[in-house]
Image (cartoon, rainbow, N blue to C red; front, side, top):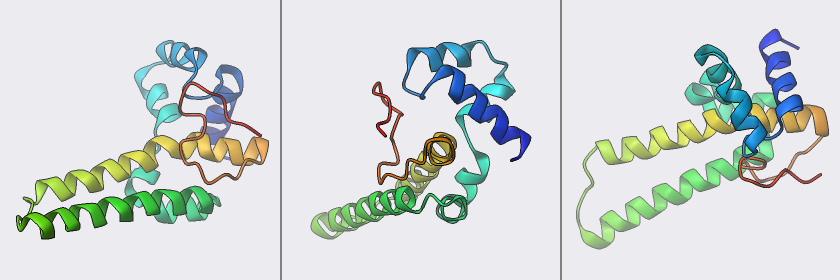
Length: 134
């Protein structure tokens, strides 16, 4: 395992899931660069769906792709119903938002898969106040 993953896994192991107060407090004690390393994943931002499949997070990936397709269908339906075409920055913002979802969920999802064997469909598992279930 690469050193960056070992560092992320060690942080999650000692500070808990991203929704916990211990996690937030632990992040506050890190440098800016370490906070970015632990809480985000630039490769997932740039290549989200492909990267999730490479990591073996296919269930979470399909869930995120379903959300993405649902948003696209809703936007297209809104445009058809109203007869108004949205300006380009709005769909681009949706794409950026999806990339941000991949970026912010990748590290902890991979941690759950590798350390606890959790392969659920919920891409946001452990991101809220409740700990992930086995």
